[in-house]
Length: 266
Image 1: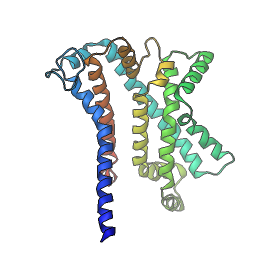
Image 2 (image 1 turned 135 degrees about the vertical axis):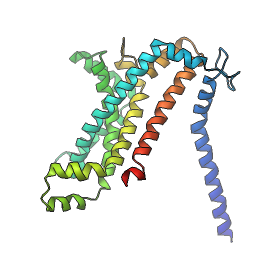
Image 3 (image 1 turned 90 degrees about the vertical axis):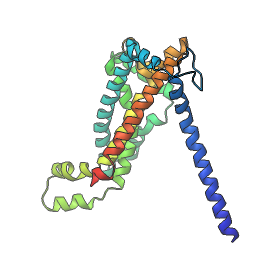
Image 4 (image 1 turned 120 degrees about the vertical axis):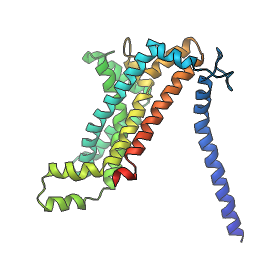
């Protein structure tokens, strides 16, 4: 009897803790979105009145629109490149045994361990040396560097759980390695590939620390532009821009969940 009572108490405590964690994660975004609809001149919660004036100001601002376009372009290209490179790296690491495999895995995951400031400063100095400083290509390379570890980690986990008997069965029927890869391996890894792509896109789209070092002039991403704007003034326009970032992030997650859900697998 006592044991059942304790189990119920612990279950309720677990629900309360989870609810508090979810609330702590969601509440800041809710406050930002609510503040963006204010009709006043200052950021205030709860907002004073309802208006879309700050969203209108955002879409009329060439400064923020250009930064948003750049962020989407960099995030999309970085996602595609990191998926290609990450898939090849994860496939080699998980399917083949070679000398230094652990070293290669550690090297690919090292950007997760290196402080962002140190990584950004190092990449900036390297790009100055090779002539890519403050260029779109240099910014893209930096974003591929920070997104690649998430892709390798996610795809490696997917490949560990992959049933290789399906590939062996296809090869026993004289299917070429390229055919097996195209018709069996990649289709069955689609959920993991989409998850890795979402991680890469969200990481690139919201990156600030690296973009501060590598972006300059006409290569200023939206998060960096917001940071520079906040240093000068704080008004509800910042909340509107932040809400747009939240919407794009949620859309990426929802689309990925829709594509990689049970319906797409069946």
